[in-house]
Length: 378
Image (cartoon, rainbow, N blue to C red; front, side, top):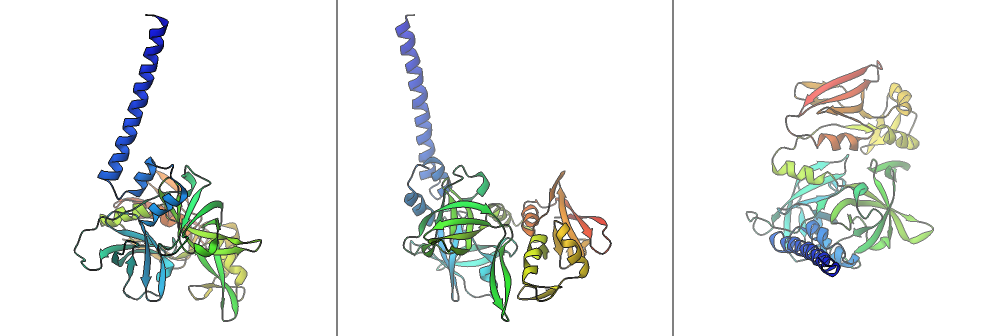
């Protein structure tokens, strides 16, 4: 075989490989656009070269204006059958009022709270057609992802109310911290937590994106912006505190299978206690749940040297009980062990456990300083 024929054969092989890649690419694109037209995450995994505005417009298809009473805030659909993720703390005063969700297409839905956790600051609403609650829904949705694993680690989009103008903004993740805001209670400045270990963002033009959603450009919802603080050096930008949403999809799947276990754990982690003590009424009191909570001397003595979650009431599950005078330091399950630093750490693990799983909470009795291991079953 001559040298020219060898070269020609190599180019033919390369051409066939490239043609195969192109055909595969378009096959996947056709699949997501026709077989799964509501899967926004799938579409963006194929066409992630779109402009920010084009990507943002796709995200708005999964966004809803959630309204009840005088409240109006954003929610994002994470399942084709209609499960909208939003903020738990917006329902602090909820007492069974009607919840309506409006889409920019003009569709109106009823919402039912099927999950609520204040430690994670997440609520999940099940959608029903406002005019026919028996109809099956097939809606645009996005999957949820982790801020730390985005392939576009420095680029995010902040999307606001779907009915507002200029509701798509670029955002940049800048740091992880404990998010909180201060408010006045009986003329005393106190701490009101947004969520422990929230993520702070810098968002340009903060006036047009308040309490919205944070998406990465690869197709996933990675957070819900709950509060912001204006940068005094630049009034056109702000720090947003974003509630992490990476486990929302897992929770929804458990809800659909009727396999989600609710964990009645009420407590404070050490970072939260430390910050609240800066706004104490006296040496033993911190502001918590719209009132003043008195901490024992033994808690105040130990909190600075401990990581973990202080139980404020007994945790009872099945035949097992962990008393309120304990600090949970780690959780063990399926041969794994994970340190517990915040309530978010604890709940994120608990909601990932399947029904029938046995887990152990390792804790310290603050009265005796003894290490205790208590075993539970989901």
